Amino acid sequence: MLTRIRGGMIATEEGVFPGDILIEDEKIREILEPEAPADDAEIIDAGGKYILPGAVDIHTHMDLEVGIARVIDDFYTGTVAAACGGTTTIVDHMAFGPAGCSPWHQVKEYHRLADGQAAVDYGFHGVLQHVSDAVPDEMARIAEEEGITSFKVYLTYDGRLDDLDLMKILDRAAKEHILIAAHCENHGIVTYRREQFIRQGKTQAKWHPVSRPAEAEAEAVSRLLYLARAAGEAPVYIVHLSTRQGLEEIRKAKAAGQKHFGAETCPQYLLLDEHLYDDPREGLKAIMAPPLRRQEDRDALWGALAGNELDTVATDHCPFTFARQKQQGAQNFTKCPSGAPGVEERLILLYSEGVLRNRITLPQLVKYACTNPARVAGLYPRKGAIQSGSEADLVILDPDQEWTMTTGLLHGNSDYTCYEGMKIRGAVERVLLRGKTVALNGQFTGERGGGQYLRRGRSSLA
Ligand SMILES: [Zn+2]
Image (cartoon, rainbow, N blue to C red; front, side, top):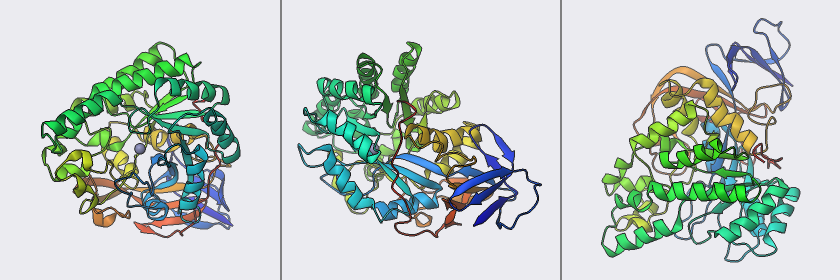
Protein backbone atom coordinates (compact mmCIF):
# COMPACT_ATOMS: atom_id res chain seq x y z
CA MET A 1 0.00 0.00 0.00
CA LEU A 2 1.24 3.49 -0.94
CA THR A 3 0.56 6.73 0.92
CA ARG A 4 1.77 10.12 -0.23
CA ILE A 5 2.03 13.08 2.13
CA ARG A 6 1.66 15.96 -0.25
CA GLY A 7 2.43 19.66 -0.24
CA GLY A 8 4.18 20.02 3.12
CA MET A 9 7.47 21.47 4.26
CA ILE A 10 9.76 18.67 5.41
CA ALA A 11 11.76 19.54 8.53
CA THR A 12 14.92 17.57 9.28
CA GLU A 13 17.99 18.35 11.38
CA GLU A 14 19.60 19.58 8.14
CA GLY A 15 16.97 22.07 7.09
CA VAL A 16 13.41 22.75 5.97
CA PHE A 17 12.41 22.15 2.34
CA PRO A 18 9.29 21.47 0.27
CA GLY A 19 8.76 17.84 -0.68
CA ASP A 20 6.33 14.95 -0.71
CA ILE A 21 6.88 11.75 1.24
CA LEU A 22 5.97 8.45 -0.35
CA ILE A 23 5.27 5.71 2.17
CA GLU A 24 5.13 2.06 1.21
CA ASP A 25 3.66 -0.11 3.95
CA GLU A 26 5.60 0.72 7.12
CA LYS A 27 8.56 2.55 5.59
CA ILE A 28 9.44 5.72 3.75
CA ARG A 29 10.03 4.71 0.13
CA GLU A 30 11.28 8.04 -1.15
CA ILE A 31 11.19 11.80 -0.89
CA LEU A 32 9.62 13.26 -4.02
CA GLU A 33 9.83 16.68 -5.61
CA PRO A 34 6.58 18.54 -4.88
CA GLU A 35 5.70 18.52 -8.58
CA ALA A 36 6.55 14.85 -9.16
CA PRO A 37 3.79 13.10 -11.12
CA ALA A 38 0.92 11.60 -9.20
CA ASP A 39 0.90 7.89 -8.50
CA ASP A 40 -1.94 5.75 -7.23
CA ALA A 41 -1.07 6.46 -3.61
CA GLU A 42 -3.60 7.45 -1.01
CA ILE A 43 -3.07 11.19 -0.41
CA ILE A 44 -2.60 12.98 2.90
CA ASP A 45 -2.67 16.73 2.30
CA ALA A 46 -0.02 18.62 4.25
CA GLY A 47 -0.27 21.97 2.48
CA GLY A 48 0.90 24.77 4.75
CA LYS A 49 2.14 22.28 7.36
CA TYR A 50 5.50 21.03 8.56
CA ILE A 51 6.37 17.33 8.45
CA LEU A 52 8.78 16.18 11.15
CA PRO A 53 10.19 12.76 11.99
CA GLY A 54 8.14 11.08 14.72
CA ALA A 55 9.57 12.33 18.00
CA VAL A 56 11.65 10.01 20.17
CA ASP A 57 11.53 10.37 23.96
CA ILE A 58 14.32 8.40 25.58
CA HIS A 59 13.43 9.28 29.17
CA THR A 60 10.02 8.14 30.37
CA HIS A 61 8.81 6.24 33.44
CA MET A 62 5.62 4.36 32.55
CA ASP A 63 4.01 2.23 35.27
CA LEU A 64 6.90 3.09 37.62
CA GLU A 65 6.73 1.79 41.19
CA VAL A 66 8.64 4.07 43.58
CA GLY A 67 7.67 2.46 46.86
CA ILE A 68 5.54 5.30 48.23
CA ALA A 69 3.46 5.50 45.04
CA ARG A 70 3.00 4.08 41.57
CA VAL A 71 3.01 6.32 38.50
CA ILE A 72 -0.54 6.94 37.21
CA ASP A 73 0.22 6.17 33.52
CA ASP A 74 0.74 2.58 32.46
CA PHE A 75 2.32 1.67 29.13
CA TYR A 76 -1.03 2.11 27.37
CA THR A 77 -2.22 5.48 28.69
CA GLY A 78 1.30 6.91 28.71
CA THR A 79 1.92 5.96 25.11
CA VAL A 80 -1.51 7.22 24.01
CA ALA A 81 -0.40 10.57 25.45
CA ALA A 82 2.94 10.22 23.68
CA ALA A 83 1.26 9.49 20.34
CA CYS A 84 -1.12 12.45 20.62
CA GLY A 85 1.86 14.71 21.31
CA GLY A 86 3.81 13.47 18.28
CA THR A 87 6.11 11.00 20.04
CA THR A 88 6.18 7.66 18.23
CA THR A 89 9.06 6.01 20.12
CA ILE A 90 9.86 5.90 23.82
CA VAL A 91 12.78 4.33 25.64
CA ASP A 92 11.60 3.81 29.20
CA HIS A 93 13.71 3.84 32.35
CA MET A 94 12.93 0.88 34.58
CA ALA A 95 12.13 1.06 38.27
CA PHE A 96 14.42 -0.61 40.78
CA GLY A 97 13.50 -4.23 41.44
CA PRO A 98 13.60 -6.06 44.80
CA ALA A 99 16.83 -5.53 46.77
CA GLY A 100 19.68 -7.63 45.41
CA CYS A 101 17.83 -8.79 42.28
CA SER A 102 19.57 -9.51 38.99
CA PRO A 103 19.17 -6.90 36.22
CA TRP A 104 17.18 -9.58 34.38
CA HIS A 105 14.41 -9.29 36.96
CA GLN A 106 13.23 -5.90 35.73
CA VAL A 107 13.77 -6.76 32.07
CA LYS A 108 11.22 -9.53 32.47
CA GLU A 109 8.93 -7.35 34.59
CA TYR A 110 8.94 -4.56 31.99
CA HIS A 111 8.08 -6.88 29.14
CA ARG A 112 5.15 -8.02 31.27
CA LEU A 113 4.08 -4.39 31.80
CA ALA A 114 4.56 -3.13 28.24
CA ASP A 115 4.14 -5.98 25.75
CA GLY A 116 0.69 -5.90 24.16
CA GLN A 117 -0.03 -2.54 25.86
CA ALA A 118 2.15 0.15 24.32
CA ALA A 119 0.57 2.23 21.56
CA VAL A 120 3.90 3.52 20.19
CA ASP A 121 7.18 1.68 19.61
CA TYR A 122 9.16 1.18 22.79
CA GLY A 123 12.44 0.06 24.23
CA PHE A 124 13.91 -0.08 27.71
CA HIS A 125 17.03 1.14 29.44
CA GLY A 126 18.20 -1.48 31.92
CA VAL A 127 18.81 -0.49 35.54
CA LEU A 128 21.79 -1.36 37.76
CA GLN A 129 20.94 -1.04 41.44
CA HIS A 130 23.88 -2.92 42.93
CA VAL A 131 27.03 -4.51 41.54
CA SER A 132 27.89 -8.12 42.32
CA ASP A 133 30.52 -10.10 40.40
CA ALA A 134 27.75 -11.34 38.10
CA VAL A 135 26.21 -7.97 37.21
CA PRO A 136 28.70 -6.80 34.53
CA ASP A 137 28.32 -10.15 32.74
CA GLU A 138 24.55 -9.97 32.99
CA MET A 139 24.64 -6.43 31.58
CA ALA A 140 26.60 -7.63 28.56
CA ARG A 141 24.25 -10.57 28.03
CA ILE A 142 21.13 -8.41 28.25
CA ALA A 143 22.60 -6.09 25.62
CA GLU A 144 23.16 -9.03 23.28
CA GLU A 145 19.97 -10.97 23.89
CA GLU A 146 17.47 -8.17 24.45
CA GLY A 147 18.92 -5.29 22.46
CA ILE A 148 18.99 -3.26 25.68
CA THR A 149 22.20 -1.38 24.97
CA SER A 150 21.97 1.24 27.71
CA PHE A 151 21.72 0.95 31.49
CA LYS A 152 20.79 3.52 34.11
CA VAL A 153 22.71 4.15 37.29
CA TYR A 154 21.84 6.51 40.12
CA LEU A 155 24.33 8.53 42.13
CA THR A 156 21.68 9.18 44.78
CA TYR A 157 18.72 7.24 46.28
CA ASP A 158 18.85 3.83 47.97
CA GLY A 159 19.79 2.05 44.76
CA ARG A 160 22.79 4.33 44.15
CA LEU A 161 26.18 3.01 43.13
CA ASP A 162 29.38 4.16 44.83
CA ASP A 163 32.55 4.99 42.93
CA LEU A 164 33.94 1.45 43.12
CA ASP A 165 30.70 -0.02 41.77
CA LEU A 166 30.64 2.62 39.05
CA MET A 167 34.19 1.77 37.99
CA LYS A 168 33.30 -1.93 37.68
CA ILE A 169 30.35 -1.04 35.46
CA LEU A 170 32.06 1.68 33.43
CA ASP A 171 35.10 -0.46 32.70
CA ARG A 172 32.90 -3.22 31.29
CA ALA A 173 30.64 -0.73 29.48
CA ALA A 174 33.67 0.74 27.69
CA LYS A 175 34.66 -2.72 26.43
CA GLU A 176 31.14 -3.76 25.40
CA HIS A 177 30.09 -0.39 23.93
CA ILE A 178 27.19 -0.12 26.33
CA LEU A 179 25.88 3.33 27.27
CA ILE A 180 25.61 4.15 30.97
CA ALA A 181 22.89 6.74 31.65
CA ALA A 182 23.30 8.46 35.00
CA HIS A 183 21.13 10.42 37.41
CA CYS A 184 23.68 12.87 38.72
CA GLU A 185 23.10 14.31 42.19
CA ASN A 186 25.51 14.08 45.13
CA HIS A 187 23.85 11.83 47.71
CA GLY A 188 25.58 13.32 50.75
CA ILE A 189 24.57 16.89 49.99
CA VAL A 190 20.94 15.99 49.37
CA THR A 191 20.61 13.64 52.34
CA TYR A 192 22.28 16.07 54.75
CA ARG A 193 20.00 18.94 53.74
CA ARG A 194 16.81 16.88 53.78
CA GLU A 195 17.51 15.51 57.26
CA GLN A 196 18.48 18.96 58.51
CA PHE A 197 15.34 20.58 57.07
CA ILE A 198 13.09 17.93 58.61
CA ARG A 199 14.71 18.54 62.03
CA GLN A 200 14.18 22.27 61.60
CA GLY A 201 10.57 21.92 60.48
CA LYS A 202 11.40 23.27 57.03
CA THR A 203 9.08 20.85 55.27
CA GLN A 204 7.15 23.08 52.84
CA ALA A 205 7.67 22.67 49.10
CA LYS A 206 9.90 25.75 48.94
CA TRP A 207 12.65 23.81 50.77
CA HIS A 208 12.75 21.12 48.09
CA PRO A 209 15.02 23.02 45.64
CA VAL A 210 17.22 24.23 48.51
CA SER A 211 17.75 20.59 49.55
CA ARG A 212 19.04 19.69 46.07
CA PRO A 213 21.32 22.60 45.17
CA ALA A 214 23.14 23.10 41.89
CA GLU A 215 26.39 21.97 43.56
CA ALA A 216 24.87 18.51 44.10
CA GLU A 217 24.30 18.16 40.36
CA ALA A 218 27.59 19.72 39.27
CA GLU A 219 29.68 17.55 41.60
CA ALA A 220 28.00 14.36 40.43
CA VAL A 221 28.24 15.31 36.73
CA SER A 222 31.93 16.08 37.18
CA ARG A 223 32.61 12.86 39.09
CA LEU A 224 30.76 10.72 36.57
CA LEU A 225 32.74 12.24 33.70
CA TYR A 226 36.07 11.72 35.49
CA LEU A 227 35.18 8.13 36.35
CA ALA A 228 34.15 7.48 32.73
CA ARG A 229 37.49 8.86 31.57
CA ALA A 230 39.40 6.81 34.12
CA ALA A 231 37.56 3.73 32.83
CA GLY A 232 38.89 4.34 29.31
CA GLU A 233 36.31 6.83 28.04
CA ALA A 234 33.33 4.70 28.94
CA PRO A 235 30.22 5.98 27.12
CA VAL A 236 28.03 7.94 29.52
CA TYR A 237 24.84 9.95 29.18
CA ILE A 238 23.79 12.56 31.72
CA VAL A 239 20.01 12.56 32.08
CA HIS A 240 17.93 15.63 32.94
CA LEU A 241 20.67 18.24 33.22
CA SER A 242 19.14 21.20 35.07
CA THR A 243 21.83 23.72 36.05
CA ARG A 244 24.37 26.12 34.61
CA GLN A 245 26.96 24.67 36.98
CA GLY A 246 26.32 21.15 35.66
CA LEU A 247 26.65 22.49 32.13
CA GLU A 248 30.01 24.04 33.04
CA GLU A 249 31.30 20.58 34.01
CA ILE A 250 30.23 19.25 30.61
CA ARG A 251 32.01 22.12 28.89
CA LYS A 252 35.16 21.38 30.90
CA ALA A 253 35.16 17.73 29.86
CA LYS A 254 34.62 18.67 26.22
CA ALA A 255 37.43 21.23 26.38
CA ALA A 256 39.68 18.52 27.82
CA GLY A 257 38.96 16.38 24.77
CA GLN A 258 36.76 13.76 26.40
CA LYS A 259 34.54 11.89 23.93
CA HIS A 260 31.78 9.30 24.21
CA PHE A 261 29.47 11.28 26.45
CA GLY A 262 26.27 13.21 25.99
CA ALA A 263 23.71 15.16 27.97
CA GLU A 264 19.97 15.59 28.00
CA THR A 265 17.76 18.31 29.39
CA CYS A 266 13.96 18.47 29.67
CA PRO A 267 11.26 21.09 28.95
CA GLN A 268 10.62 21.67 32.65
CA TYR A 269 14.21 22.83 33.16
CA LEU A 270 13.90 25.14 30.16
CA LEU A 271 10.50 26.63 30.88
CA LEU A 272 9.54 26.40 34.56
CA ASP A 273 10.87 28.38 37.50
CA GLU A 274 11.71 27.40 41.07
CA HIS A 275 9.30 30.11 42.28
CA LEU A 276 6.55 27.57 41.62
CA TYR A 277 7.57 26.06 44.97
CA ASP A 278 6.67 29.26 46.86
CA ASP A 279 3.03 28.13 46.92
CA PRO A 280 3.06 25.24 49.42
CA ARG A 281 0.10 23.53 47.74
CA GLU A 282 0.65 24.19 44.03
CA GLY A 283 4.36 23.62 44.50
CA LEU A 284 3.75 19.89 45.04
CA LYS A 285 2.94 19.57 41.33
CA ALA A 286 6.56 20.35 40.49
CA ILE A 287 8.28 18.22 43.14
CA MET A 288 10.80 16.34 41.02
CA ALA A 289 14.50 15.53 41.12
CA PRO A 290 16.44 17.49 40.15
CA PRO A 291 14.17 20.39 41.09
CA LEU A 292 13.19 23.37 38.98
CA ARG A 293 15.89 26.02 38.89
CA ARG A 294 16.44 29.74 38.41
CA GLN A 295 16.16 31.98 35.38
CA GLU A 296 19.94 31.99 34.87
CA ASP A 297 19.94 28.20 34.64
CA ARG A 298 17.15 28.22 32.06
CA ASP A 299 18.96 30.85 30.02
CA ALA A 300 22.16 28.79 30.17
CA LEU A 301 20.38 25.62 29.01
CA TRP A 302 18.64 27.39 26.11
CA GLY A 303 21.99 28.88 25.17
CA ALA A 304 23.56 25.43 25.23
CA LEU A 305 20.83 24.10 22.93
CA ALA A 306 21.28 27.05 20.56
CA GLY A 307 25.03 26.42 20.59
CA ASN A 308 24.69 22.66 19.96
CA GLU A 309 26.34 21.80 23.29
CA LEU A 310 23.67 19.36 24.49
CA ASP A 311 22.46 16.19 22.78
CA THR A 312 18.77 15.67 23.48
CA VAL A 313 15.62 17.03 25.08
CA ALA A 314 13.63 14.25 26.78
CA THR A 315 10.79 14.49 29.31
CA ASP A 316 11.37 12.36 32.43
CA HIS A 317 7.60 11.74 32.18
CA CYS A 318 6.76 10.47 35.66
CA PRO A 319 3.14 11.44 36.40
CA PHE A 320 1.26 11.29 39.67
CA THR A 321 -2.15 12.73 40.57
CA PHE A 322 -2.25 16.08 42.30
CA ALA A 323 -5.58 15.40 44.04
CA ARG A 324 -4.35 12.25 45.75
CA GLN A 325 -0.74 11.11 45.31
CA LYS A 326 1.00 14.48 45.44
CA GLN A 327 -0.90 15.31 48.64
CA GLN A 328 1.27 12.76 50.47
CA GLY A 329 3.72 15.66 50.57
CA ALA A 330 1.25 18.28 51.83
CA GLN A 331 2.89 18.43 55.28
CA ASN A 332 6.38 17.32 54.25
CA PHE A 333 7.94 17.64 50.78
CA THR A 334 10.15 14.61 51.41
CA LYS A 335 7.01 12.42 51.42
CA CYS A 336 5.80 13.71 48.05
CA PRO A 337 6.25 11.30 45.12
CA SER A 338 8.84 12.87 42.85
CA GLY A 339 7.98 13.48 39.20
CA ALA A 340 5.57 15.18 36.81
CA PRO A 341 3.87 14.45 33.49
CA GLY A 342 5.30 15.76 30.22
CA VAL A 343 5.46 13.15 27.44
CA GLU A 344 2.60 14.74 25.48
CA GLU A 345 3.64 18.36 25.99
CA ARG A 346 7.30 18.16 24.93
CA LEU A 347 7.25 18.53 21.15
CA ILE A 348 4.77 21.39 20.92
CA LEU A 349 6.41 23.25 23.83
CA LEU A 350 9.74 23.10 22.03
CA TYR A 351 8.06 24.44 18.90
CA SER A 352 5.99 27.18 20.51
CA GLU A 353 8.44 28.28 23.24
CA GLY A 354 11.65 27.30 21.51
CA VAL A 355 11.39 27.77 17.74
CA LEU A 356 8.83 30.57 17.66
CA ARG A 357 10.69 32.51 20.36
CA ASN A 358 13.91 32.14 18.36
CA ARG A 359 15.68 30.21 21.10
CA ILE A 360 16.35 27.28 18.77
CA THR A 361 15.71 26.69 15.06
CA LEU A 362 13.24 24.16 13.67
CA PRO A 363 16.11 21.91 12.47
CA GLN A 364 17.52 22.06 16.01
CA LEU A 365 14.14 21.04 17.42
CA VAL A 366 14.18 18.03 15.09
CA LYS A 367 17.72 17.21 16.15
CA TYR A 368 17.01 17.38 19.90
CA ALA A 369 13.55 15.79 19.98
CA CYS A 370 13.73 13.25 17.14
CA THR A 371 17.06 12.50 15.49
CA ASN A 372 19.66 12.66 18.27
CA PRO A 373 17.53 10.68 20.73
CA ALA A 374 17.31 7.94 18.07
CA ARG A 375 21.10 8.07 17.65
CA VAL A 376 21.79 7.99 21.38
CA ALA A 377 19.40 5.06 21.80
CA GLY A 378 20.91 3.08 18.89
CA LEU A 379 17.79 3.43 16.74
CA TYR A 380 19.05 5.70 13.95
CA PRO A 381 18.22 5.80 11.02
CA ARG A 382 15.39 3.34 11.59
CA LYS A 383 13.82 6.04 13.80
CA GLY A 384 14.23 9.81 13.95
CA ALA A 385 14.89 10.37 10.25
CA ILE A 386 12.95 11.27 7.12
CA GLN A 387 14.82 9.34 4.48
CA SER A 388 14.36 6.41 2.19
CA GLY A 389 14.24 3.19 4.22
CA SER A 390 13.44 4.77 7.58
CA GLU A 391 10.25 3.69 9.32
CA ALA A 392 7.36 5.99 8.40
CA ASP A 393 6.99 7.64 11.81
CA LEU A 394 5.93 11.19 10.98
CA VAL A 395 4.34 14.23 12.58
CA ILE A 396 2.32 16.78 10.63
CA LEU A 397 2.52 20.03 12.56
CA ASP A 398 0.12 22.88 11.82
CA PRO A 399 1.98 26.12 12.52
CA ASP A 400 -1.13 28.30 12.38
CA GLN A 401 -3.24 26.92 15.21
CA GLU A 402 -3.37 28.77 18.52
CA TRP A 403 -4.63 27.13 21.68
CA THR A 404 -4.24 27.08 25.43
CA MET A 405 -2.54 24.15 27.15
CA THR A 406 -4.93 22.59 29.62
CA THR A 407 -5.22 19.19 31.28
CA GLY A 408 -8.56 18.41 29.61
CA LEU A 409 -6.93 18.41 26.17
CA LEU A 410 -4.19 15.98 27.19
CA HIS A 411 -4.45 12.20 27.22
CA GLY A 412 -2.40 10.94 30.16
CA ASN A 413 -3.99 9.86 33.43
CA SER A 414 -2.60 12.69 35.55
CA ASP A 415 -5.03 15.38 36.69
CA TYR A 416 -2.71 18.28 35.95
CA THR A 417 -0.09 19.68 33.62
CA CYS A 418 2.71 21.96 34.79
CA TYR A 419 1.96 24.11 31.70
CA GLU A 420 -1.71 24.79 32.50
CA GLY A 421 -2.88 28.01 30.85
CA MET A 422 0.17 28.42 28.62
CA LYS A 423 -0.66 29.96 25.24
CA ILE A 424 0.59 27.66 22.49
CA ARG A 425 1.14 28.42 18.84
CA GLY A 426 1.22 25.42 16.55
CA ALA A 427 -0.45 22.04 16.98
CA VAL A 428 0.27 18.40 16.29
CA GLU A 429 -2.30 17.64 13.61
CA ARG A 430 -1.54 14.08 12.55
CA VAL A 431 0.88 11.43 13.77
CA LEU A 432 1.88 8.34 11.82
CA LEU A 433 3.50 5.27 13.36
CA ARG A 434 5.04 3.03 10.71
CA GLY A 435 2.71 4.49 8.10
CA LYS A 436 -0.49 4.24 10.15
CA THR A 437 -2.25 7.30 11.58
CA VAL A 438 -2.25 6.91 15.37
CA ALA A 439 -3.37 10.44 16.29
CA LEU A 440 -5.46 12.97 14.40
CA ASN A 441 -6.41 16.44 15.67
CA GLY A 442 -5.90 15.53 19.29
CA GLN A 443 -7.73 12.19 19.09
CA PHE A 444 -5.94 8.87 19.52
CA THR A 445 -6.64 6.64 16.51
CA GLY A 446 -4.10 3.88 17.14
CA GLU A 447 -4.53 0.74 19.14
CA ARG A 448 -3.53 -0.85 22.42
CA GLY A 449 -0.55 -3.04 21.67
CA GLY A 450 0.08 -1.26 18.33
CA GLY A 451 3.62 -0.43 19.45
CA GLN A 452 6.48 -2.83 18.80
CA TYR A 453 9.32 -3.70 21.13
CA LEU A 454 12.59 -2.23 19.83
CA ARG A 455 15.76 -4.27 20.02
CA ARG A 456 18.30 -1.48 19.85
CA GLY A 457 21.73 -1.29 18.32
CA ARG A 458 24.74 0.41 19.87
CA SER A 459 24.42 4.04 20.93
CA SER A 460 26.11 6.68 18.79
CA LEU A 461 27.87 7.76 22.00
CA ALA A 462 29.38 4.29 22.43
ZN1 LIG B 1 13.82 9.87 35.28
